[in-house]
Length: 568
Ligand code: ARG
Image 1 (cartoon, rainbow, N blue to C red):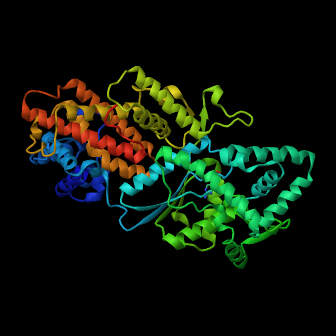
Image 2 (tube, rainbow, N blue to C red; image 1 turned 180 degrees about the vertical axis):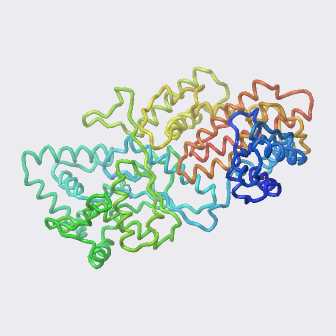
Image 3 (cartoon, protein in one colour; image 1 turned 90 degrees about the horizontal axis):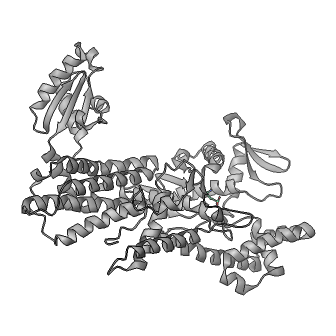
């Protein structure tokens, strides 16, 4: 796609002496008010170089620029040069390119030859996959999709929490009070029940704690019986997680979780010792990061067992050595900020020069407004239940509209799940937010259903007009210069930049907001201008814009991991 800003900077650098193209590029603004043009150049800074009053400079530049056919008009207003691009030129560039490439016009090759790791979701085995996990799962998946669109090779990691002393407790509980059928029927609920039961019983009988510790040691040493049970718990839990991933259309390339690194840590403990970074404290080994304001990191416990942080150090090195990543991205709640700061610091102290290529992408908390859904004592809100409930509610809403010839089940699934995902990705990720059914399922608000509905509306227009392959030849873009269509075209034009920006900031909500803007601009265009007019040339041009919009919205939704149904 042509980059107008760069083209304008090029032109200006020929007119303005003493400033480089980059400097001019940095000065160019996009005015908030469209009456001030598509781009504007403030001339205050030029006064020094050109030794003239800024309005006079602006006037001179405006006069010279107006000769160029890239512009419809160029005006001087006070110290500003306001540039209005030739509408027809912009429309034919943008719509023409989308007709040719489809939604992939928003892709780039920024990441060519580079591998990025995106670690996301990473739930703990035998623990509920609850509403809190939706954030990492959905934000991480979208970052993965955005990086793919930017041309990176992406490896999706699910760093399962599948290791730790709690497995000793669970095995003990299973042996005392468990049975196979219950675990198979409802693995996570059952295992969670064992875990709670263990704690209740251990209060009465502390010897259970010793038994659990001994059992975990056996597991660590690879004792076949314990390993078999642990493996079984892991497999059954994963089956349950996968049900949710299937609903969300999410896949992973690696499920290497914490247990995978259990034998890879001595190397780092030794390295830390050799570099004199390890200190002993009450039998445990620590790295003191107080001078960096990062407290103390516990590397091994007094019984020699390793910790979460040590496994993260081993995991990062493993990933570097296996994939030679350009970036290693962790989508993990902001509660773990200190943890990430600590281990990345330690990696750096160990001399790994790629330490800062490990990026923690934090996010805020989700809570629930609906009392019946809140996390009470032992009452957890399972993510799967939330998704199912959303599908159910969507089905009711759609059924009320009495649609004919629609696969209601399929649409309710696409829209119901899309709605939850969309709401999740609507807010700046770092903000805490309250999950609200009203907001999720509102077909008129800035929601998933609204955007999906707009997409379906565009599809329906194209169907009605019987647009077939080969229809869009010799499009007369001069017919598309009305205000509503031009506003829409400008949003489509910005889309590739938006995707790049969302990638650079690890912020899917930038894409979410932009497709809401596109949907709103499209609906205004739809209301302001009659599309299926008698004039064939005008109709064709308008339908070309409808098609370009449809492709862009579908692409945007796909970057969020959301399906775009053609009918709803
Ligand atoms: N399993 C952890 C939890 O549920 C999240 C893991 C985050 N990833 C990591 N590499 N530490 O809190």
